[in-house]
Structure formats: C-alpha cells, structure tokens
Image (cartoon, rainbow, N blue to C red):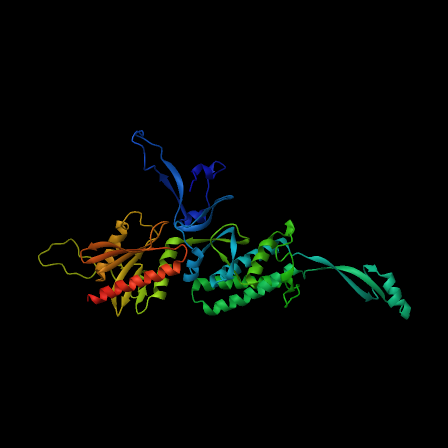
Amino acid sequence: MDLQPEDLRIDGRIAMRQDVLRRGFVEWRSAVARDLPRDAPEEVTVERKLFAKGVVGLIPLAGNLSVLVQPRFPASVTHMVNVCEWPTIALDVVRHYIEAPDAAEEWMLDRLVADFMASVRRLLSQGLMREYRQHESVTSTPKGRILMGRTMQQQASRGIDFRVNISHFEKTETTAPNQALLAAVRWSLGWLDGRLDTSSDRETLRNIRATRREAIHHLHALRFVEDDPERRFMGDPSVQGLREIPEARSQYRRALRLAVALLERRGFTLEGSQGILGLSSLLLSTDDLFEEYVRCQLRHYTSGYQVLDGNRLNPARKLFEEEMVPAGMAVVESLSPGSNKVQPDILVEKDGRTLLVADVKYQAVSGRHADRHAIEQVITYAERLNCSEIMTVHPCVLGQPPGLVLSGRIGSIRVWQYRVSLAENPDAGMKEMASAVESLCHLKESTE
C-alpha cells in the first residue's frame, strides 16, 4: 500500500486499530528498491511501508482511514466462497456491497441476519419512527375537532343529542418501515432456530444463541407494531429506499436495506465497493480460501479417489519413523519421532495408497518452476508417504496459459505444477484439473 507511517500520525502519534494489528492483517516492512541504477550512491534511503498480509476486503486502519485490498489475481471470490461455504472475518466497520440477482447462499443469510440485528439495535437507540394518523369516530366524550356538519346530519337529525362526530390525530408505531422491520426480525428468528438444529460447531452455536436472544429483544421493542401478513409494506417508498429517511432516524436506512434483502432472500457479491447494501466489512484469507476451493472441487470432480486434507488427517501421520542406532555408532541422543506430522494440503489416495501429494500456493509462478522451498516441502511429504508424483498448484496471472506443467524429476519423484485460471469460468478450469489429477493417479497405479 502506498502509505507511509506519517499518513497514520494522529495527535503526534502513529496510531492503528489494535484488532487489525493483533490479527496480522497488515504489517510494516522496509521497502528497498531492487533495480537501483549502477551510479546509485553507496547508501540509499530505506522507507517503511504498509503491506497487506493475505486478506482481501475493506480494512480500517485508524480514524476514518480504510484501505480496500483486492485479490492479487483475477478471481470470482464470491463464487469460491459459495463453493466452500468458507467463513468470513467480520470487522466493525460498514462497507457497501452490490446486491446479486441470485438467491442468497446460507453463509450470506447468516451474515445478513447478524448485521440486521446489529442495525436494529442502533436504530432502537435512536427511537422508532412514529406518525400521526387521522381518525374519525362517534362518541359522547369528544376530543379533537367536532365535525358539525356530520353531527347535524347523522346525530341531531335523528334526535340524538348525546353523541357527536369527531376527528382527531393519534400517534402510532404501525408504519410501513416498522412493519418491514417486524417481518424481518420474525423471519430471522425462524432462520436462527433452524440453524440451531443444523449446526454442530460450538463457537457457531454460541453466536447463533446470542443473535437469537437479540432477536427476541427486538420483537419486544416492536410489540406495538401491527403485523401485515400480506406484506403491503414492501411497496412503500421508504422501505424501497425511494423516499429519504429523516437524518434523526438515519439508522433506518441501513436496517431497511437489510430487512428487504432478508425478506426477498437477496444475495450479494464480495467484489466491488459501490453497492447499497451496508454490511460489516468481510475479510477473506485468500491463501486458505484458494486451498479449500481446490480441495472441494477435486472432491467434486474426481471419481473413485479420496481427496484428503493433509492438515486434518486422523490419525495423524508422523514425519519421522522410529529408528535404531546402528551398531558401532556413537550418538549424543536418539530422538523420538516427536509431534512432527506430515501435513500436505492435498492427498489423493485409493485403497490406502497415496497416489498424489499436492501443495496449494496462492502465489503465481513468476519464472518456469515453482518456488524451491515449496518443492522441497512437498518432496519431503512424498518421500515419507512413498509417493512418486507430486504437484504444486498455483493461480494464473493474466496472459499465463492454465494447465499441467512438468517440471522434471528429482530422484524417483516426478515434479508437476498446475496453473488454475480463477477468472472467467473457474469451475471449468477445476474440472480440467481434476481430469489431469486422475490421469496422474492412473499413471502411478499402472507402474505398481
């Protein structure tokens, strides 16, 4: 990012949000020019600059300063999250997203419900909008204005001298915007009840219960609003954002957008920043998302093979095997295998045999071969698992052809790389990759 420390100086101090620093979303690094001219002086100025670290989204830094970090490679981030149902990190800063024409995914509805509850909480702190409505009635205890003409025609002409026709105004909370909020809160409560039945993760259940308690609190605050089962309120200009909401009730603007999105199950896209749907800024770990996307799609498009997550093997596979000290060798100590594990990103197996070891890197191949450290890591895994085919997986940069690339052989191990295009039709690219993976597995099987 083109930011210097001085850009974040507040009251003489360089200040940044502690949650952004604590979670490691950004870091300061020394920016040193690599292509210095030959006649450059012996000593050059070293600048400290801010760099994003593996997340995309709107990152608040300090005060009103935020930065929008885009994916490093052309990619449909929303599609990848939909495939993986990948969790997002929500920060307490509002970002505007573009509404999508497709129906909302489950993770989108979870996010919409959570943000809607927060927006209603802020709305209630400003107070509910009320309006005065005119009512006419016949009464013996008049209030408001007596309608003399109607009283003479309907009461006095019939000899009734103890009742009059009146007109008065009453303040009410039953307005179209409040009815929209009530309907959305009720729908959200039903959604949360369903999520309690289908979720098993302890942290997720705790969050759902907290959001559900807040929904019940909001229902109590809206108890004087009359329900509209036919949802006539959806045609109201204020609900649809066609009529300006008073500044004193500004929280209605965001809350109503979210209420309509929930009631109509509208989705949103994680790309772009010019939308109208105000949500918490959702950050994504691109490294983890790309890895999970590749794994999910290989499971979907391959047949007859197990695609395993090497980081979650149960039981775990140790990196070291037990070994006896050879006779006649003097050693200081003979170590136990310890807690070191074999943890490749992807293992493709069949009948208990490892046919392919793959490591997924959200890094483009800038030269011909993948990064040497990545190759050395996956070779270690392959040697331990007795596998002769290894692969590193990378996203394509613009102008780079996708597909399978043979790097060469290291001893008995063949080294491959696969470049995936995430831009226009990522599913088609992943289907081709799955076909290549199956071919490599057949190759391994035929040589055994």
